[in-house]
Length: 318
Image 1 (tube, rainbow, N blue to C red):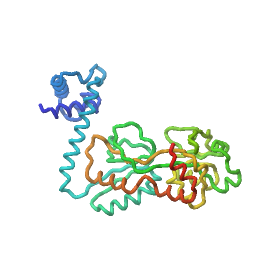
Image 2: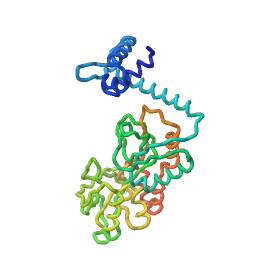
Image 3: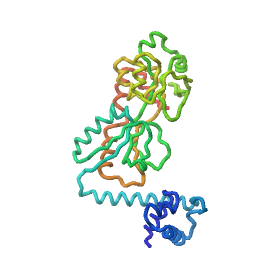
Image 4: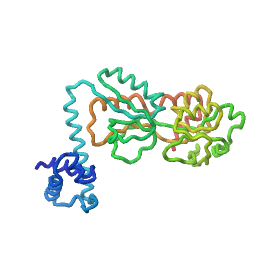
């Protein structure tokens, strides 16, 4: 039996969670899956897996070997994909998941340009704000905003994403401008509802010291554009990504509060499965997005021209 077959069998057992799962997926007899693992361990002279009647678990040596084997198989898949695609045109279908508001405002026009440039590429786009399972749901890649969680996904950074508190001129005329960031807690708050709720907004002051606003929301919603509309109507203070509220700030419908403070230091990333060989069309789209969404986003450039203090908040980070 080839060493590569033994390695593939070992990696499949770890990723499937059991030898019986590998047997079901590949059609191999369970005894064959078990025999391949045993032969690999005998050849290496080391135990890779601890087996019980209920589960399997990696030994320390097995864990290190698994990480190296997974990378080897990934590199091999990439090499084969690159070789097979050198003579092919850019064509085929791309499945992409992306947040709703970011797609509507910025990603959508870029995708139109990409599809016009590559007429033989088809796109299947799903817009929602949940984090899809790329492998289970069959996506080639996804665009995600925020701090990435540890995972088996690869990621490429696209651009920085900042949040900022905003309020309408009418609301501030009626209630007055807050003197300190913590004073925002005295206003009605419009909060973006996510899977992880938080009753405080953290920030960093220009001198580097940190603080937090304790909030009690009047409106909670998982749609940032609706919250922006509510803020424009004077229903409360919202903290939103600048790619959503930027046009309202530049147009004078919303006023940024404490723009020299830093309220977040997130980013937009494109993520894709680590162990899957990327087709040329997917790699080309990733490179296209990286090229057109650079570190200084156009929506932030507009705000900085109008509010010079925003420049300090941009440069400081959190």
